[in-house]
Length: 307
Length: 255
Image 1 (cartoon, rainbow over the protein chains, first blue to last red):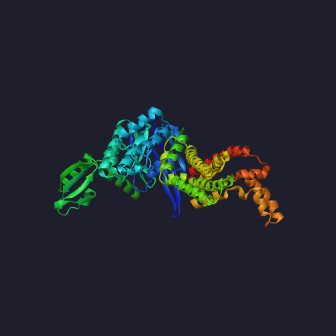
Image 2: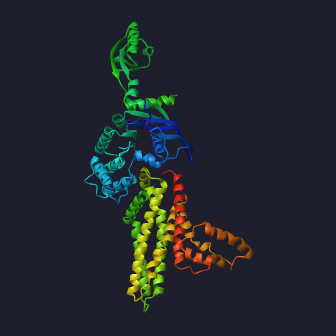
Image 3: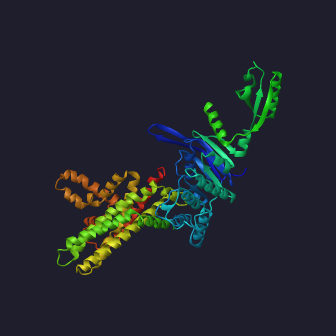
């Protein structure tokens, strides 16, 4: 595997509050490959935002290192020449127009003259804000501000864009607009680092995920592989009266006196069918099933709680 | 270039915000007071101009403190500072840009005030003197210093405390003139200890608005324009130091 584009190594962060110390990050390691759409998942307070802000340098980590394209991050300038950040709620000065903001951000990104104006126009067109570009931000809807945030993030054509809950608080239409935008960004080859607990969004957008729980990475890998690992077979079976279903593993009662169980694969299914036959029972139905990301996240977190 | 971009956007914000509008209202009020109080005079003269200049000077000084308290803090509160800092720009560049934008606003204010005062004095029949036009702009280095100093203080102290500390940064408290005033009520033994401390503080701390008076206190000479010219590198040195201090303090905090 090639060198990750972004790597967070052994990150630790503790917040000191009046109530005591909160370990926001406990030895967190994350790796994002070039071209990935990476989703950082977890419940509220899991440490997602702290991890992202630590990578961006907006939060001082107690320990750990951030590497960009194999190189230790030297300073803010070199990092943000290649990266962009879209916060949860992009903030803009209400009195300025969308175009004025983009011109300002473009200048900070070392764009000048005709190239600056060209990139501003292009970015506005990509997010569909060309018509509203010269109106003050005060008149923008939340979705428009989010789109302007995306335009500001892609202005200098960064290699990686960090997005913190990009669709939070948006109505379904605006959410779809932003999701389509992100998909088109990914299609253009940009690497996206997405922090979200809207799992349906993540499942649609991301190819690689990491699950954070209480400041620790529980699982990390390609989404398709993680979900395949969690594939299983749902089995419905019947037993003669007086036979204890617990003898066939964890089973739950189903309709008409039948029972339901879960087995990992076809070999386990064959084994169960054999044991059922010997006890006078039979398999009524078997169906291959795949958990969705939400089920998977819950399972990982619960397993960790039990451990 | 990036410093100029931040300065330009800061000035745009100020132009459209309540701060400059408030300063303009204060300036108008100052002119109003000046006009009303000079109505009784038969002939407007340099003395009257100085009176108006004194008022405008005070407004400028308070505006510098006001801007210093709000330039960074407002950007922090509405997330604009974070948006700026997630671009390829260093923290000191962003702070210098903010300071430069605030200073540009003060320059506009000083020029407008000087022009209005001169015009008012001329309409009152005073004879034109370059000092009428140049006095307020010549104080800009000191005001820039107040602005940056307040910016730095606001990163370390709550707003009100930072404002009070900036007010106390006037050199009246450390100068030999001030010490001479203390002689009346302080015993010699205390003064003997206090004087070298006060003089050391004077040179170490950035005395601000009345720099030229204190300078004269120390050199005992009427330096004239040389004095004003000296204010520029002196104020610039401390303004840069204050901006770097503000950057350092800000870098220690969550953004």
